[in-house]
Image (cartoon, rainbow, N blue to C red; front, side):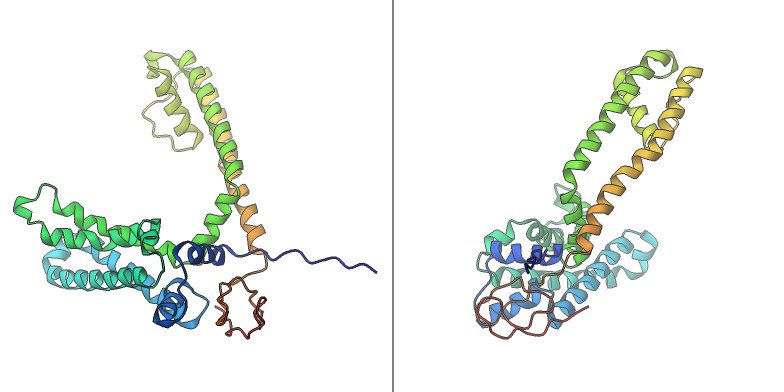
Length: 301
């Protein structure tokens, strides 16, 4: 009697991203750097998950301060408090950034990665605004203050659902590219047809203008700055509006199908073996699949 081998376990997007980060940035071996790395870059432990939650709350609070600071009536009353909070957030993010560089074996790789640049943007504007006097600034200091809103991009590193959605988009990218190509062909053809039917006297002064009208009509936005005046033009516009409803549903179905496929994949965690540092164990695994040593308990959400 033959038995069928089980299908290999498909890693979850979040664990895959963390495993790739460990390989690229360099996971340290032993000492306080390994403990710091486990807390900061991995979310499979209680301490790591608590660190992520606290950091998310800090990011949201700092962005809220930036938004409220742009309201003149609120700034007039709480401007001093906002300055104190801003420097507190800046010092916290600076300490986090420095600690990330210290606990990886290849700090330059992390500094030049996407989230490394985002981490730098989270702290750099406040320091630049401090060192560049407003009276002699060559750039508007308010722009530097508004750049702090980039901190919200840091959320992508700590919320696993961002990685889940990103993996679904990457898996369906070829289908989406083909779909976008079809939409571009459609708006170019219909825009050119409307240019012929309506003409410059009705606002369709060129084919690019007509294509712009086709895009706004296909997406059901309809700004109303250009509208067809002839009966044939209105008929074509009606067909494009009805077509737009169906077209908007296509990418949603593509991404949803990929998300469903990833959702039911068996989860693989980034739990590391304390002896050989191997990652990629199943959520219910009790022993290392390479050296057989006991694994730390998996902390579920």
